[in-house]
Image (cartoon, rainbow over all chains, first blue to last red; front, side):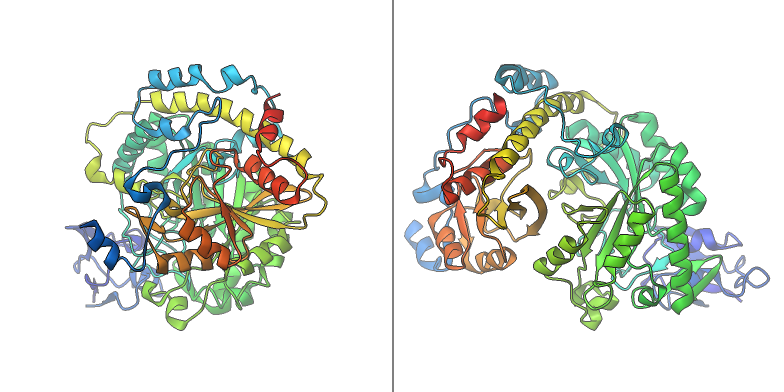
Length: 64
Length: 529
């Protein structure tokens, strides 16, 4: 029950970081990563996973 | 050795300035001309002031004339007079820099692929340096200390400055604390604009650029595949309806608060080109100050939807035809260069590479000397330029025979014909009609002359880019490119080197149409009288 970021596709724009309702996304070594312990796939917050909904690159924020 | 070089150089041409290896004499200097170019060199403010005192307006007696305010109110003129993007006149003198601090975006446009750069807001193929607000303020201080023309700091993507608001605000707050007289401006797609309008006002940001490509959501569906709004991705007509409503609301709110709004519209042939007439009408009615039609930049190599599906951009003459149709509406901006999101310098030049973060010392502080001295110089130069323009307007009203003549000018800035044909990376295009001489746009070209030699293939590209142009004015041109241009129906001359652009054009017209002697000198003399 968590999302992950495909590093090779990520543009490091950071939109996912501030849309995440769980503060599960942070920058590590110039790349955004999702902490699977904090990620809830936005259940209980929103209808869809926010990182995937805002990400400009298709298939980059995906279920782990 | 040199024989060898010539024999392999079948399609290379020697540029005029180094004919036979000898430098060609420069045109005789005009009386009291201060070269703005000379001020760009790292001289001290003292030297700059000395140059000022030894020449220019203090001795020519041509100053004190009113600035080219046109129909602008004093309040508006104060806001735009040093902003190269909002005033065509200012763009000859002042420089802007952009910092890429707000990379997150809330919409997807078919002309943008975020995996590369936004091909609309920055020239593609060169990766932008993303900066933190703390890095950005250091870079701004370094540029403002070194580039005397620097007057404006903009946040213009990649990304959306209003959506990625925390970083935008942090950057502007830091810069305003260090360099209070720098103008701040931002560009946005408008979706997240309404909730920040009051802060924008409080932060003294008096220029906002909005990209508005449609006022009909049906047209929007062909441009925007999705938007992210209120924690949801919207697609299709819903997306464009929301975007349109938010854009109109944001525009009205800015206009109400007297913040100057420039509307950028990307002209996409077959998608919104006809529709932009309607966009122009609507944004004008809602209080936009300027409308800037930008040609779509489209290439499969950019990886954009339009690039990959073969959507073409407009040709220069198509763009001009649309701009001419709109010129009754809001003032049109025709001098936009669609610069990179991290551009530094005068419009049309980019010194960004000199100021990448690895060139910026960690303990940088701001030194205002060069900017202060330059602003003093420009105030005087502009007075003379405006007087010349007015004299030329009178002169040209006598040339009833001219319908419309397109003149391409090679210039390094300062409002003068002062660039070698082969060194130009763009030409500024002016249209002369019985009403006067008006700047109408620019044509980007590949530099024809590199290291003293010109390439035929490049020259062909330059000639194609100059479609519709009647004459090229430059500071120097060799016989070979001149003949090639002539064969293509374009004349070229360096007879008016270092003249004010308008004075040079008028003098050429006078020579051509036989009303006044061709020297051009009496026009300048009249201006200084």
